[in-house]
Length: 450
Image 1 (cartoon, rainbow, N blue to C red):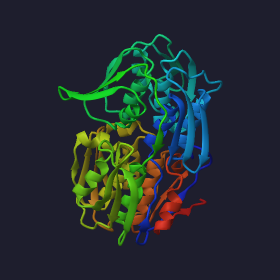
Image 2: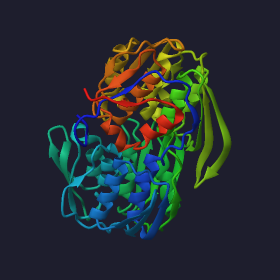
Image 3: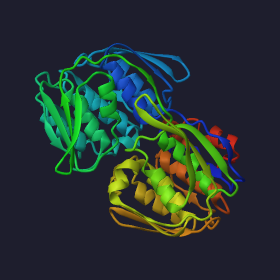
């Protein structure tokens, strides 16, 4: 069932050409961080273009629960009057982060080095996800954590008032873990160090610098090293959130597989640590171009134009690219279904501990719609059926996962018989305007009362 109510079944029949301008919402990663860093600053941070999906709204509520003044002034326009590093107050109630793994993990880091306690929970999907990868490094600062078996939510973090800085090597590529450690390091004296063998999205480092923290990055012996000087006074900022490349992936990829399509997605953030999908699509032969390339707020931005691409071919996606497109593998597997040959995705085991086991969810749903898929713990291989070759006609389980639901609806648009999803409700957590946006481009998305 849906994360926020009864299931909302939906069917996407085969679509005619998708055409027009797709104005996708603001970047979710930057939206979360804008609210959290604004709350940790002294003074008022102004944010425009904030993604107002449920995940981000839950983070806004959490910042208010920790004592910041958070106010919505208009569509996408927010003000956050922060309490400063170390200034969080103890919340009076449980912090419910809904479906958001990013929100809960970053917030845990932000409060871990303050002498307060907070209990975190979420929906059924979030309560099933592992938190030990966060609580373990936070323990190095002196923080204690008490949760369910396997380190799962509900979980209580007891922050420390005598934090010591850490030198932490990420065991797996994870921007969430890296960011939690850096946020915890803000209120620890001295230098906190994070080392990562594979570069992950670097919004936290960029934004920390923008707010006035001293952050240095370097490559040492092939390892990316981030050094943060603790106990800065963060300065409030005015932030214009770029449009979310992960959300843009859905209208872009749908256009690539629906005959006659031509879609422009303006103002997309193309941070190199987030743009792996678009690099991969171009390698596959997608008709995808960048227009009006520019920089806004320290982030590279461009307008993306995607056209129907009947000559795409399967490729092997290198494992070192996985971190830059980890959220986009579900929709990539849809595009791969319409390519010629096999697309092999390696280094994707992180997908098994997302909102759902995304490898299994996509494999099961693709097979139900006539696509052959092979999987291992760390790989996924999709046997493409060529342009207009996917039969469809099946039903897919969303598993409380917004990206799985949207991916299968896009599959339906390009298939012969359409695809049904058992629950489209979770889409609201990250892309609340997905349905009207796709319908405006020409898609048909039908609520199913079965």
